[in-house]
Amino acid sequence: MTSPAGDQPDQVAAIVPAAGRGERLGPGAPKALRLLGGVPLLVHAVRNLAAARLVGLVIVAAPPDEVTAVRALLADHHTGATLHVVPGGSTRPESVRAALAALPDAVGVVLVHDAARPLAPVELIDAVASAVRAGADAVVPGLPVTDTVKRVDGDVVIETVDRSVLRSAQTPQGFRRAVLEEAHLDLSDGGITDDAGLVERAGYSVLVVPGAEEAFKVTRPLDLVLAEAVLARRRSGGVSGVR
Image (cartoon, rainbow, N blue to C red; front, side, top):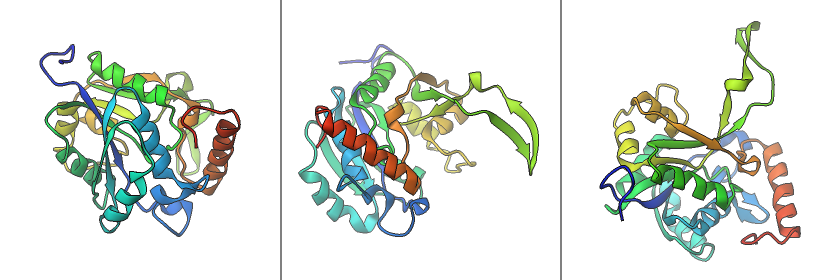
């Protein structure tokens, strides 16, 4: 099967760079292995990716000294897509590149998803993959910015930014494989914090699709409290796939 853009394969794989420490959550296990509802964030994220209709493969880039443990952890906690675990790098881009190198040739669409967004809905995952399959080079889910945003110089406000043209980017972000691989050829990050930013730097356009409130990022202890509340609500509501 081929994508609308030409003769590129369109099998979908999802990459989860999960080798970071996540120090803003405080001391302890790597962020991806922090518990949410008694289960590591990574398990929730992988479970949702693997359950997505379009995703056939999930590759996790784990801390190099935790590969065996992460592989065992995930073995009994996902259904659907095939799962591989590879050693990640010391930075997020290095982990993404390690996972890209492990992709089979049949994969033409790649999603990159933060383990720290453990509650991203399956519907969002499929929407991003579908948009790439439909011909987009790169796709990010985004939410309108609701706070008033100020641009500052030190402690002085320079201007109030028009928030109507701003979006808060989420993951999974989706890419044509060749586009993402090209973007990662430049090994300097230049302060760029997501893969879509690397793709923009490489000269490609990035499409925005509607994001999801529940795809928020667990970065601080307060985020973990919110995630526990969302998970409890899902479980009490009998949401399919939530355990």
